[in-house]
Image (cartoon, rainbow, N blue to C red; front, side, top):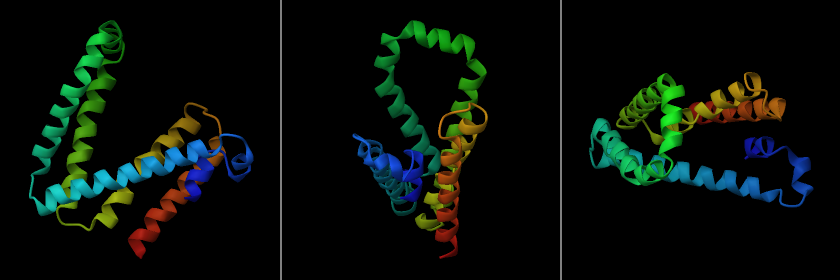
Length: 158
């Protein structure tokens, strides 16, 4: 919760008009992450769906859902493929590998351990955005990311 306040600009910004919208989005995203994490845990540990098969089905679902949008913007897709091919392939491969790894760990580990560590990528993205891309609220975002890491540690220790 503290991290959400920092990511949205700190407690001072809560007094501004419309300031609760980012907080609500943060809470909604957290709820969605919790829901799909619990579904993933049930799929691999209760229903014994192999992680590789679950990733394959997710990829197939994304293909079916996103193809019409890609078709509408085909010139943009071609441009991105032409200029960012290696990045695209890298994200495609590493995203699937990370998901399969998280699912594999969920087969035998408690979800209360896996879920917070799974979201540690937010920390990495935050630091990269603040340091490499000079995004706004850099110091506040890094502080928020530190609170996230402390939350992960407290869950693991507790």
